[in-house]
Image 1 (cartoon, rainbow, N blue to C red):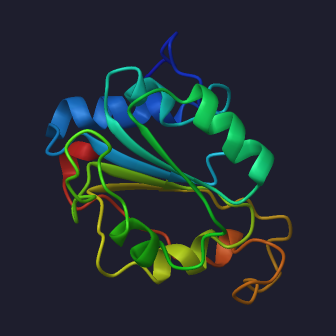
Image 2: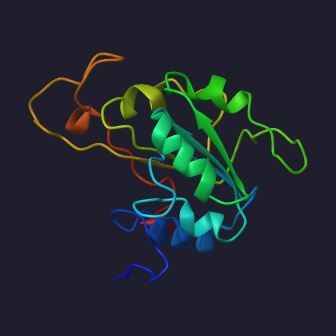
Length: 170
C-alpha cells in the first residue's frame, strides 16, 4: 500500500495521495488551491507542494488564520482572506505575484475543506476545473440531508460518489 510521506503534513495523507497521482499522470501547471487553508504547516494539504515552489492559492475566511498564512506560507502562496461562496469568482481575481499570470483554468489540483459547504462550493465550480479535486465530506449524521447553501452541517454521504475515469488510477 501507499505509505504517508515523511514530509506530508496533511491531516489524513492527502498530499501523499496527490503526489502519487501526479507522479502517474504528470503535472501541467504546478498551480493549486486550498479553500479552508486554515494553517500553513500542520494539516495543510498544499504545504508539500508549496515546498516544491508550486504557485498556491490559500483561501481562508478567518482573519487570524489568514494573517498566519500570509506570514508563514512562503513566497509561492497567494493568501485570500474571504469567505468562499463562489470559487470561480475568487480564482478569477488571482494573479501570480511573480509573473502576474492568471490562475489557470485547469490547475493540477484543488482542495475544499471548509467544514460544511464543500458540496455546494464544488457544485458551483464551472469555469475552473482542476484536474484533481480533494473535497472533504465528513458525515456527522449519515441520515441528515445536505445543509442548505450557507447553512451549518456537512453534505457527507449525500454528496455523489465519483469513480476514476481511468482504470489505472484505482
